[in-house]
Image 1 (cartoon, rainbow, N blue to C red):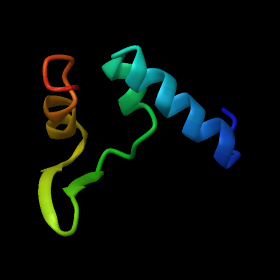
Image 2 (image 1 turned 90 degrees about the vertical axis):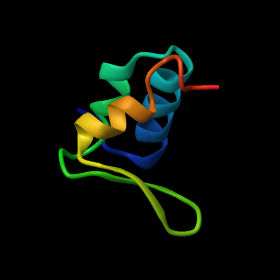
Image 3 (image 1 turned 180 degrees about the horizontal axis):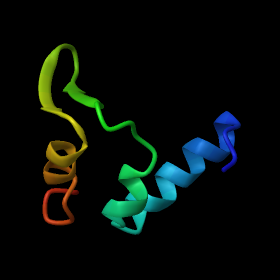
Image 4 (image 1 turned 30 degrees about the vertical axis):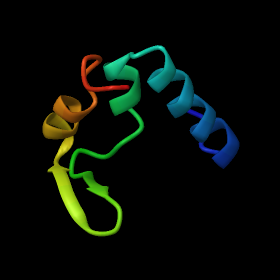
Length: 59
C-alpha cells in the first residue's frame, strides 16, 4: 500500500466522497480517536468512528 502523503490524503478523500465507510476506515488505526476542534472527543476506536461517518451522518 502506498504511504506517500498525497496518495494517502487522496485515498481518504475519495473514500469520503463516495461514502465508502470501509475504504474510509482502512486509512485509520484501530485505536483512532476522532475529535471536534478544539478538544471534544467524538469517538474512540474505529467501530465508533464508523458510526460518526455513516452515510446518513456525512453532510
